[in-house]
Structure formats: C-alpha cells, structure tokens
Length: 100
Image 1 (cartoon, helix red, strand yellow):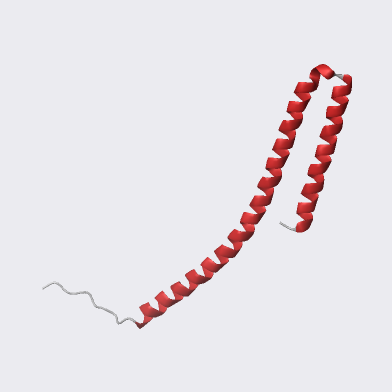
Image 2 (cartoon, helix red, strand yellow; image 1 turned 30 degrees about the vertical axis):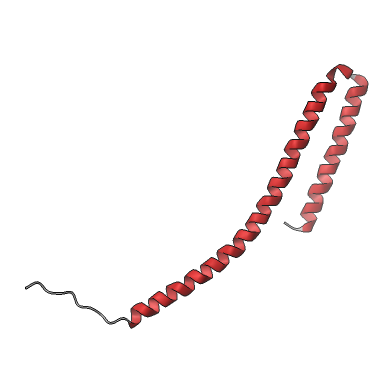
C-alpha cells in the first residue's frame, strides 16, 4: 500500500474520531439520558473503522508479498519444466515388448 493511502486512511480515521467526539459531546449536553447509548455506538463505530483500516492495510501488504512469491515460483517452475523437457528429448526411445 502506498504511503499516500496510509496517510488518507489515518486522516479519515482521525476525522471520524473528531466527529464522534463532537457528537458525543452534543448528546451529553442535550440528552444526558442517552449518554450510555451514544458512547456504545461511538465505540462500535470506531472499532469497525479500526478493523476495516487494518484489514485493508494487511490485504494490500499480503497482495504485495504474494505477487513477488508467485513470480519467483513461476520462474522456478518454468526452469524445472524446461529441464524435464530436455531430459525427455535426450532419453532413448524404448519400444514396447511384444508378446510371444
């Protein structure tokens, strides 16, 4: 994942935190009876956002690692296939045995 995407995710997450804090503050000021509900909602929202950010980051990291590994594996597989083909071409032909 590029550094600019990490920066965008970080800025978006901090903006979400600021918005959540502002909403919680407003709810506490105007509806103190709903404080427990809004705090639980805020916690759930931030948890889901954190999980999504980490998931996207790790998926980008895994895709980067996998692409490199797959390329190396394919190259090695092609080398081995070429070796097998050359060995088959060099091998003497064997005639099947005839039944008497």
